[in-house]
Amino acid sequence: MIGASVMAPRFLWLLLGLGATGCGIAGAVLPLVPTTPFLLLAAFAFAKSSPRLHAWLTTHPQFGPLIDNWQQHCAIGRGAKRAALVVMGLALALSWLLAVPGWVLAVQAVVLAGVATFILSRPDGPAGPQA
Image 1 (tube, one colour):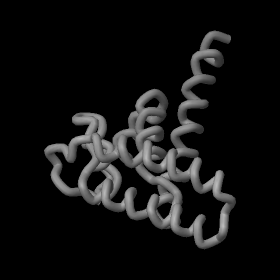
Image 2 (cartoon, one colour):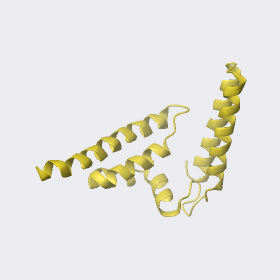
Image 3 (tube, helix red, strand yellow):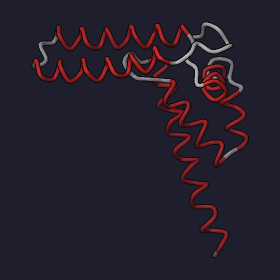
Image 4 (cartoon, helix red, strand yellow):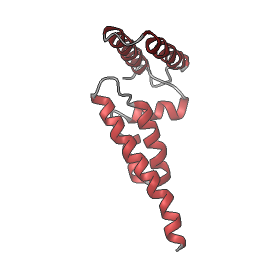
């Protein structure tokens, strides 16, 4: 019975990693859906559940450098910063064009400003510009 209780957390981490990977991949192709936070969560979850999937994700040609830059240097590449800021600006503009109530726009603007401040406060990292 001890084996089953040890496997349950590992299985839950695996499910979380798979779900986060799916969301991250969706974010790579869908506008307004973030990619990097989901991939960072997936890498964390896979580190606790599946060395094989963790290695696959961290060595992936597209996603690996983003994860490595964050894990090693708490950095966000210039390209990723630029893309995030553009998408946040487009989201706010779309909300305005759709005549979202003013208080919703204000809350959205405050939250996006906070996120933008965090993103811009991170170093670019030694990996240089990245998407």
